Image 1 (spheres, rainbow, N blue to C red):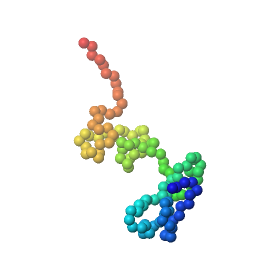
Image 2: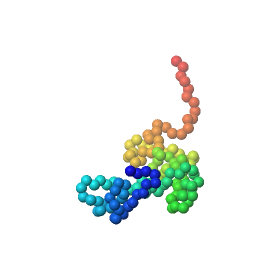
Image 3: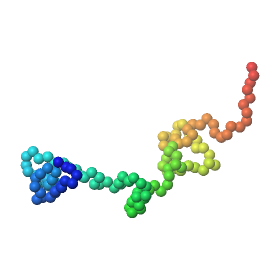
Image 4: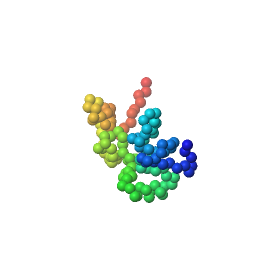
Length: 125
C-alpha cells in the first residue's frame, strides 16, 4: 500500500512485492497485472504556474515564441491572403450574384452603392 514516506524499488533484481516496479520480461507467468503508460506529467512541457513572472522566465529560456501580432485587426470574411483591413478610402467590393463561390466576398449583388444623394419627394393624394 502506498503512503507518504514509503519506499518504491525498481529494476531487474527487485523482489516481487506490492508497489515495486519490475520489467515486463521479469514478471512471472500467470495472472500478473501491469499498469502500462507514462508517469503523470512526464511529457508535459508547460507546467501549471501560479504567478506570471516564473512563466516569463521559463518562456525566455526556451525557443517558444508568443504570437507576433494580434488578430484584432483582421477580418474573418476575407480570404487569408487579404485578411488585413483595407484603408478607409477604398471603394466597396461589389460582386455579381452569378460569380463562382470563391469570388463572393464583400457586397454580393448590391442594388446600389455610394452615399444617398438628394431627397425623396412624397406625393400627396
